[in-house]
Length: 366
Image (tube, rainbow, N blue to C red; front, top):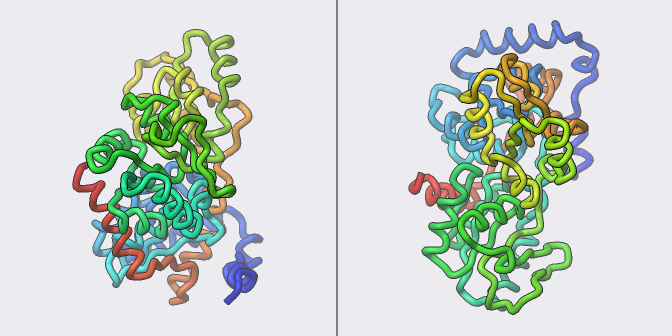
């Protein structure tokens, strides 16, 4: 089946587009009630409220995949997130469990910035440049194929919460690291550990070249030229504007933001770190948050006793996350109830095996 045929096969039927919100919600409730423990709906923090309300569990991508793994009663896991998240859930769950993605178009632009062909080509050239001195690390926000590549080559996955620990571990194994696919998380993490910016190079997968001004032997960290399209839109200008308009407001950002923005912020950390920081803050405190808009709006609603704004007032939600909407969720659940194998995420055995190596190396240190 070619790409066009795949998209047509997975196109949302018109009847779901024409249903009211109430009708769609009733369909979701009906299937959830009927299927009971056989159905599990993990939902990422960045999802729309119309979907988020039906979550059986909420969290970041790895946590949700692990909860899917632990839930042995569930035969059908409907992952409300993006493609790489559902892949990780499929890798971790058993053969009798099926993982579904309500809309197969829900990808991740960051994960797509490092495909396996580019990575293998880069690795060959980097081995020529540096020999056997490099250990690959990949952010969990990457495809199963990239996780497998890293696992096969002795490396591990990282999260935004444990990135520093994993980079420290990697430097105990090899002289250099290759960090995929988000250059900003890699740069911020290495910088926090004392690696200077002039010891970091960037690998450009489009040009297939190392971008670095100094002598190659000085390179300690090779950053893949990838980024989160949401977090890269928080700028130094945004920070300066908040400082001017709200001088008493604390700025907290995700480490997928650029080095310049993180350096100017008061705090930086993972999605869970941001959520906990706001929850534990004093009533009346003021915050500007640099992360995805659906989550920021939800935090604002949950904390009416605090003044909270988005660091960038013109931010829109993550477009690929937002492909998972109420009509697609209802259609996916109806299809499962009717015994149709539609929108299933399956990672082949070889890829799963090597990807598990990368995940296990990380989990062993957690």
